Length: 112
Length: 112
Image (cartoon, rainbow over all chains, first blue to last red; front, top):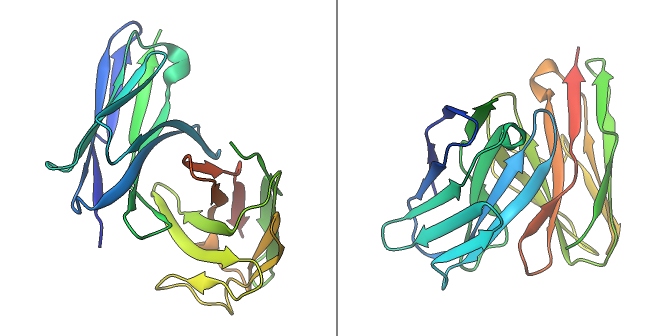
């Protein structure tokens, strides 16, 4: 069974800092990996999708990388803002499967 | 990407009662997924709903407790039956149209 781990569990940074969130997974036979943002008590907003053949994806201040061989992905957030405060989840879809395996999340707080 | 309307957004229910959650997608999709997020936890897949056939349930989830309907390619319901406080969670529906998963806004259920 795919295990997805996110480190750190919580992170607090001052506004303007660049930061990196980490995601690791045990089964490298992935189809794709997706990063989500979740605000308290709310649903999930998709941030970035990386296909297994890709190494990274960028959207605005966000950059996600994927290293299948080492079972790792990182989400880089540049010039953090208080509005970035949320829980960030990574989720893996395995080859041949339709559902997602979710990580435990990183709760980010950006201090003004 | 697809737009999913999920309702209710939240509810407080008495133990022993049932709640039906609805998800409406703005386009036709083959599969819809139902997830549960218990307090402080990540998301766990409950079942996959295909139109015209019975839902496929994950280990630990049974049809009697979580009956699912999928009457057409744009709509699905999840019922949480005979509720207990342990069912207090956020319930989310999701679809994948080939460019990543999209989630509904979630239903925050509290059982008292």
